[in-house]
Amino acid sequence: QAQLVESGGGLVQVGGSLRLSCAASGRTFRSAVMGWFRQAPGKERELVSAIWTSGNSYYSHSVKGRFTISRDNAKNTVYLQMNSLSPEDTAVYYCAARSELARNYDYWGQGTQVTVSS
Image (cartoon, rainbow, N blue to C red):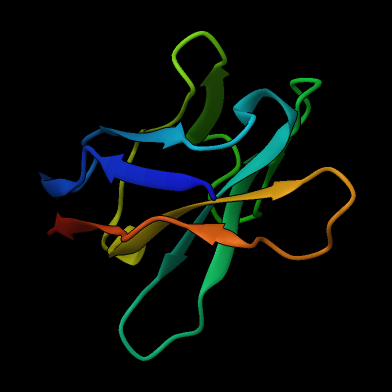
């Protein structure tokens, strides 16, 4: 059973930066695909970024060029560096994990709030 714990959220001004962290435990982190999702009020949860065990990554169109995902297998941690933040980035951000062969993410963190003020 995997456990994911996010940290690093908070309040930031437009144009600012935050780095989210997700510490994983309870399963083989190194073999998991790790993803960052977000859900804004009144909107569906969306995949923001993901990173495979190979290091390959995915970014949604809305964050490409501003966000960077990375993983540290020695620390069982995945990061999301968020730069040039805008009010549209305000949401609860969730870390999630799945195996390479799975279609769906089956382990989720509790979420961390990111608020960008204008």
